[in-house]
Image 1 (cartoon, rainbow over the protein chains, first blue to last red):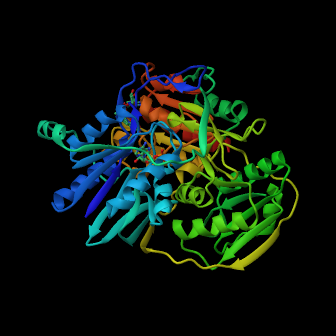
Image 2: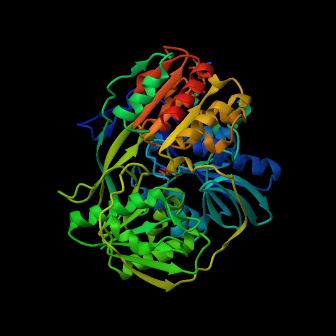
Image 3: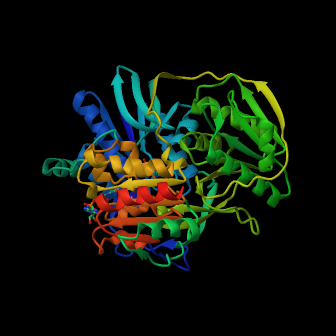
Length: 247
Length: 314
Ligand SMILES: Cc1cc2nc3c(=O)[nH]c(=O)nc-3n(C[C@H](O)[C@H](O)[C@H](O)COP(=O)(O)OP(=O)(O)OC[C@H]3O[C@@H](n4cnc5c(N)ncnc54)[C@H](O)[C@@H]3O)c2cc1C
Ligand SMILES: Nc1ncnc2c1ncn2[C@@H]1O[C@H](COP(=O)(O)O)[C@@H](O)[C@H]1O
């Protein structure tokens, strides 16, 4: 089985969020870049587990981005990917990114295409659905569990107030979230091996961006906390009723 | 025409969908056109009453009751094309997340998910959306002829007016490649993203055996239950209650955080809440900086008192 894992580069979860150029660009000054946690902890680690269970499975990684996405792809290779592809275009339009991934997938013969639930910077939760539609494949979103039985994927996905177990024949696109696997750290052997694993760069296909980011803004600052004495919880209830009007 | 896709749970239209309905009606007004809704499946509610939210027509496709992203997306896209929709609105809920991207591709229509405000149509069509897990907003322009917006739950208040909608019911079928083998619902669980009030607790509760008082507080408030990540990781609470950057992102009217320190990754999932109450025994806990109201105290003493005070007041 061939698995394609979509890897995006995001600022570290503790990164300071600020903007430059008249609030039109994210300020990357001093920002550490990581593999988007959903892509790493859930999609990639589950793919690695499937490969550990059956060595005939192979894992390809794809990232659509500039050369600064390569350290991220190397780290994903160190965790256990077999080879990586970078599509050389730095853009934030989901439709364009999905088009590039679909283009690579078309000739790749992948059985499983895995994405994360969402990127923690863009918060789109859109890419998997777009790739699936471009390839005319089924899409199981927000999956918490994935098992293979031959060419049938058994996928548990979140539904309102519960879970649903789906069975679907490959090829299929799945977005992964918490529950699917546990986080891992790459070991020395993985890091050494990653240096020589193939990382190819392909040029993008032409595509019209359907969206473009005009500007960013920060939420209004909080007025500051009003402290209520622990012996006077009735006062908190009064404030919630009369001032905040939320209960 | 503005087309709004409505989602239902067990036949009842979801609250987040009613918000999307009001939002779509407001967008239609802004653009000088009418708003119509689309319901897929058989529902128990009176659909003509949805006219109160400002839609003129409700299209119902009956006979299709098992959700399938691929099949549903085709139905929504066809309805949008048939009615010449210029804007399609979804709620950024579980099914919206599965559907909107597919419809976007089918219609070659730019999509903005997680919208938090009405579009700015003074110069094109620019939608404000939540980014960096609630730490900032981006204004995103949609360049295509058809626009798709997926609205964050609790970001726009549903407004009720007078009016009745024409209901047009037609039969539909889809073929699905996905077989639903089983469905399990946790009984009585309120869907977290739909909850107006959420009561959440962290490691300060010491162990799963102490959650009774948290559940009781949630009960008097008719609130959803949430927790911090280490609590879910330690299996004190189920994974679906984990909120934050790597868990569920929520924006209730009231978020009560008990025994949670307020790490940046936790705040990322809850900072869009309208009012935040923090109960923590450490006055230095970072959460107080993000809170509107706070009590410095021992949760084991404060929570039962708070529950009692709420009970007494209601
Ligand atoms: C990449 C990444 C992603 C992450 N994603 C998330 C996420 O999505 N969600 C999340 O929650 N965390 C996330 N975390 C973890 C986060 O950094 C914190 O470790 C976590 O939120 C701490 O949980 P806590 O507040 O319950 O526990 P602690 O930090 O241990 O805090 C417990 C608090 O309880 C208080 N307390 C103790 N006893 C009492 C008492 N009797 N009464 C009142 N208060 C008491 C203490 O003063 C303390 O403030 C992530 C971390 C990383 C690195
Ligand atoms: N530039 C990218 N390159 C490769 N995969 C991506 C990229 N952006 C997003 N993805 C994948 O799509 C998922 C959802 O992203 P998004 O729709 O942006 O929230 C992520 O978790 C990744 O798996």
